[in-house]
Length: 164
Image (cartoon, rainbow, N blue to C red; front, side):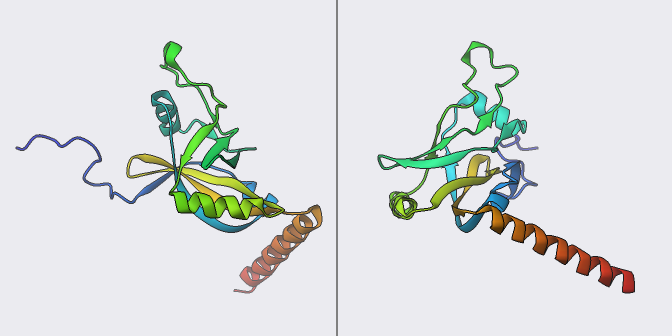
């Protein structure tokens, strides 16, 4: 019997995504125009805590500063077995993108009303990735309209289910 290979289990495909955290309010508070995938530079205790599902994207956002993209206010809880080498839960984290993508995002964010919002964090091929959205903030009347449309859709679906 051959020795067991290290790394990814053979029964799990390389492109499988395991979602670790979702920003549920992102699509309610913002109109998402486009999304892209970015890697995250993490420390050892951060990735261990992230794999345990102990992360939150609430109130997090990203900025382009001096040709680099940084993620702010993403909370990754301290690793339980991390001792004195544990990380700061709210530290800023560098996002890994190609130079052309960073320049394009920087140009769009300079336009009034655009911002970078992390939508979800997931593992892909054993590496932590963040889905970053280029979004424009919604006004309160837009949010009310979205709620009304969602409720109307639910009423229609309920009525159709009642007839069948």
